Image (cartoon, rainbow, N blue to C red):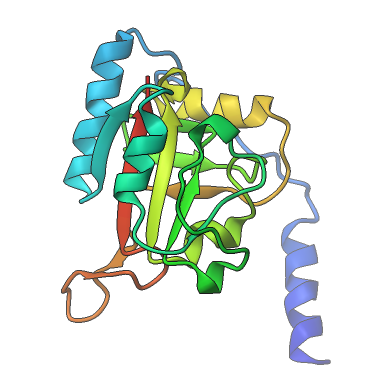
Length: 195
């Protein structure tokens, strides 16, 4: 009998009595009672703590702000609102881009996490991971306090593709416990809260 067959036989034997998984208590908060301004301030605080730069702009101010933030050739998702588009040099391939501009689906203030779900204004996953500089537009109405609220919005969108969660610039402390940025994604993150 092969090792694989032995393992599978043991699994079948241990599951033969069909044990039922216990009910998981869901007593944690699922709805926020905080106001929009308080939630937005919490998100900004977390993002700054994670070493992201945070800006605020109206739709009319956004193109000028994006032009000032863009750091070289830029890759843009096809569905980005044309009113937002900067005048920068656009390239088609993420490998040729120094910078990417995307929108976002929802942001969780409690954890300082921005969630991209691959919608047209966010583009395919690779464009948010390859360029060294990510500028992410966060519409103010998409900011929630709690992760269950954020996850409900993702689920309501009915998307089944990859999800990218961003909490500051890419960083790791694996190597001798020293923080190294840009290992698994953009080294620089600018977040623009669109009010």
